[in-house]
Length: 117
Length: 116
Image (cartoon, each protein chain N blue to C red):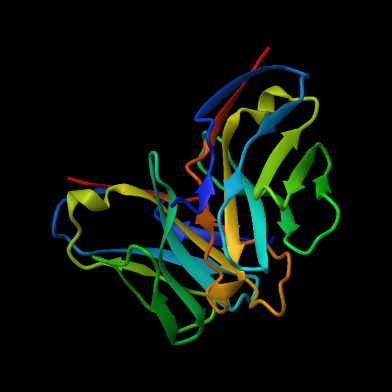
C-alpha cells in the first residue's frame, strides 16, 4: 500500500481562487510528521508547512494552511488567494516515528498545479 | 545564508564512467540524505547519514555509494553509472531529531544526471 497518496496528478485553478491539494497517508505509528513541499519549474524543493501528529490545531503559514483530519488520515494543503507564482509541483511527505534515526521523508507522487490568469 | 549546495547541477555522461555528485551544507546538521526523483514515483531515498562515519541504505541504494568523512559533506558516488540511473538527484539535511521536532529537511537545488 502507498504510504502517501496524492490523487490529483494535475489541477487548473483560476487566479485568486482558493485551492485544496489532497493528501492521504498510511502509517501505524502514533508519532509522525507531515510536510508539504513546492517544486517550481526550476526544480528546487521549497518547504511550505509542517503538521505533527500530536498537534491539535491545523498548521498555518501565510497563505498556506493544512487541513489535518487525523481519523481520516488526510493532510490536505489549502492555498488561499492563489497567485500565478503558485504554479508548481506540490509534494506531500511523511516522516514516521518508527524510523527514529533515519529522518527519511516518504513522498507522494505530487500534484502539478497550474494557476490560470 | 543557510544552504545545501550540490554540484554539478547538470551532467551528461556515458555508461560506466565513474562520477561523484558533491553535497555540502553550512548549517552544522547531523543528518544528511540523498534522494532521487523520477516521474510518477516522487522522491525516493538512496542513502542517509546520521553523523560523521555513520551511513546506511535507504530504499533504492543499488548502484550508489556514499561517504561522510566530514560533517558538512556527503558525496554521492556512482562507480559504474547505467542509463537507469538517469534521474534528478537531491541532497537534503536536517538537525538530529530530539523528540519529534518540526524541523524540515533542507534540500539542495538538485542535480540532473543523464547517463547515455
